[in-house]
Figure 1: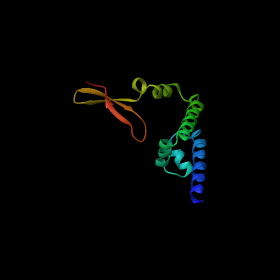
Figure 2: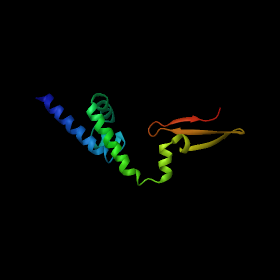
Figure 3: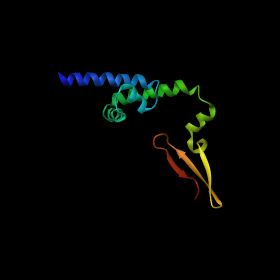
Figure 4: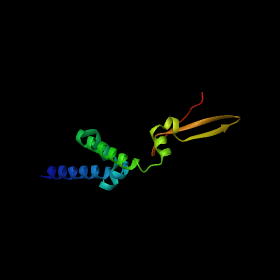
Length: 115
């Protein structure tokens, strides 16, 4: 009986996570809205193909519904970070170099484009 209750609760939490993903894009926020850890979301994604499929569709719906409101320059920056992403010129000594930021919070990736 107890296992059935746990499975029922988890199924309800997954349904809520999918519903929240239509309005909250980031896993951290979705997990918080459900009352679970972000790790739990990732565990479910790794172990439940149906859940991950529905979650990805809900997140795609979020992007589609919100893309119209984004500024064109933001769309370019997010669609092609290499070309339009945030760059910062920094000079060390007399030679400038560029730092290119890719990825997003919480773990952006930094690299330079100089040889």
